Structures are given as structure tokens and as C-alpha cells.
Image 1 (tube, rainbow, N blue to C red):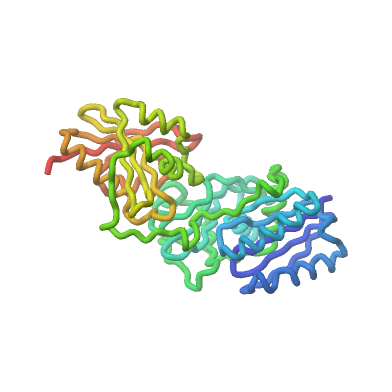
Image 2: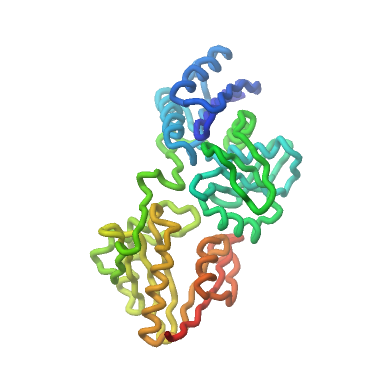
Length: 379
């Protein structure tokens, strides 16, 4: 049997578990300062079981999202021990850990579980899972970890996961959220942390420590850009913008298929492709690519920098395209959107795009492309 140490310091409390030759021992300090409580708790746990870190076979650690300080503490400890003793590391995300609390309730194979964590400022982190095995506590993720406005999350859930069991963790927020459906208040627990570690190990998710990175979905407060409308400027893209476009394309978006440098260069070579970039002062915060097909425009790409999302950048890009279409006598604009990208779908619908068809499994199995069009009306 393996000796597995599991660490979660992403929330308001500290959870550490030790599974040793089939037996489980845990410590759990709620509402604690990780910098003050972590090492005494760890020492207590290891001493109680008479083992040293070099005796461990695996170390699992929750990489985020959550408290930035907590994430750094947990990762630093786990990666240091793994490096010093050549121990494989098992990365987990906070929604995975929360989701395994579902096995404390009555669930059956095929149930959909949604783990939700309050991200503050009207946002929630979320991820959906399917119950695979109740005896061995196995889950399978059916979406990637994401952050959304609460209303966008509600729309996505109602549209595609209306039967999901919602597990909500307030994390570092002192107030709850007002969802338009039932949810269960769910704290992080050592038992769920242990289940997540075992399932990840069973799936072969142990890696070298240098491959384990923090999961910052939302970005730190310092990375956020508070936009002022008067400081936004839209200009046509040139070859001088390639580095900025590469930056926009390589943000690690989990549901996206970023363009490579070759894709970007091919766009500049395409005689019917046009693009423009939006800047906040001197910083590129988004860009749009479209094909000029005569009486139609077809949108190929819209990307917004993570720190400026949900502030109207995409709306500004689209409004600029609508103006160009009217000026050039274009009658219709086409696009396709991932059916699971609810914020984008909602924005397009609000701006007058209508569904015209579906391409099944276009992005991946179970991820259809919704075809949408907008008729351009002259002012």
C-alpha cells in the first residue's frame, strides 16, 4: 500500500491527510492562518504516524483556485518535499476536492455534481463532474474549471446541467450567493481531499513536481484592469501587433483552442481576412478577426485579455464591426460559438444574433458549435 500525504490550503482552513498502508489520519484547522498553523499540523500528523517525509510515496496538493497566499504555501511545501526526496506529486484543483464531498450524500452512478466556490465580486468558480463509481468514490470531470458571473453560471447550469447537484463553498467570502436554484453549503473536508487524491492516483495523474503549477483562473487583484471607456482605442492590426496577439492567444484558457503563431501569420496573408485590436492606453486588451465575404462578414476570432474580461471589451469590438459592416453595405454577420460558452452566447444574443443551426461535436465530443447570424440594419 502507498503512503500519500494530501494538502489543501486554498480556502479559509487547512486540511492535511495521511493515508498510510490503507489507514487514514487527518488534521483540519478551520479559519486558520496557513503560515502559522500548517507546519505544526503537519508535524503533528507525521509524528503521530511515526513517519518522515522521505517515507512518502506521493504528495497531493490543491493548486487552486483560492487564496493566493494559501496556494503558494501549499505548493511550496509539496514541491519542496517532492524535489528533495524524488517523490511524485498529484495536482488537484479546489473544485475537484469539493466535488468528492458528494459521496457524503446519497448519489448514484450518472449523477451530475457541480462544485461552486465564491470568487467574490459577483463571480463564482465552477466545474461539473459525473459520478462514475459510488463504491470506490470515482468522478469524471465533464467540464474544465472556470470562473463566471453568477448570472452566466445560472444560465449555463439551467441550459445544460439542470439536474446537477450543486455543492457550494463560500471559501474566503463571509457572505453567500443568491442562486436561482437549490444548493448545499459544503465546506472542504479531509475525507473529500483523501478521495480526490486516491481517484487521481488511480487515474495515473501523478507527475514530477516541476510540472505542477498554481491554478489561477481569475488572476490576482494586481492583474485586473479597471477600464475607462474614454481610454479605449481600436485600430487595424498590423505585423507590429503579432507579439500582442500571441499574448492574447496564450492565456491558458481551458475551453479555447488558441491560435498558433502560424495561424496568426496565415491570417495576415489571407486576402479576405481583416482584424483590429483594442487597446487600453498602450496595453492590448482584445482583438477580433473576420472574413470579408462580400455581402457577409464571418467572425473568425474574438479574444479578450483575462484581466479585462466582463467589462465590455468584446461588446466594443463587435460594435466596431457592426459600424464597419454598415459603412461597407454588408447585410449579414455570421459566427459560430461553443454551446458551453454561455457568456459569449448570451452576449451575441443580446446584440441581435440569432441561432441558425448546430454543428455537432465541432469543438470536441459533446461540445457543439451553434451557428448564429445578425442582420445589419442601416442607421
